[in-house]
Length: 215
Image (cartoon, rainbow, N blue to C red; front, side, top):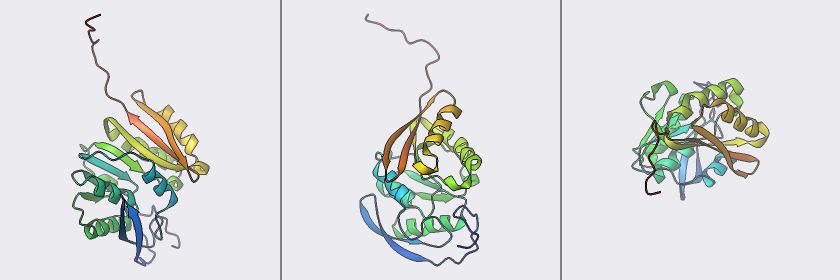
């Protein structure tokens, strides 16, 4: 891959398109991957742990895969919730092209593969599922989460998979400390050296006391 990283906007390395078989949303499917994107040869272990340890996605509304790569999380959500709109967000143009190819090959018309700045500001999400790009560095990662977690709908959840040895516990502490009241974060599962973090955006509390009757 040379000097390219999977978070490079326009990889200069050869595409080297390839087809791999993976299990997504209970289906065995063939997908196209390429060089210059994250985990081109297989469904990576972290994403597999995430997909195996999160609840069914909401059946409708807007759903977000943050840092989509070639699209395993996006495709899984789109297959499971055909009436939802799934946003695959990545800075890597090659990855977004692969998401579009794979969605088209699977007959999925409910996928939007977009650069971060191309997602309309008024779109909010009923869930976020992400294997975030830890290797971009702490400041970049924190900025990414500060941008997108507040765009959860009220009473909705973000699910993040993070390798334990790459700072899952410290990231959990940072999320707990950084988001204002109205959010909570819990570790919900572990597997193969990974942690699943659930970030909950709670509903807005009532502005006036609720009258209690019948006491």
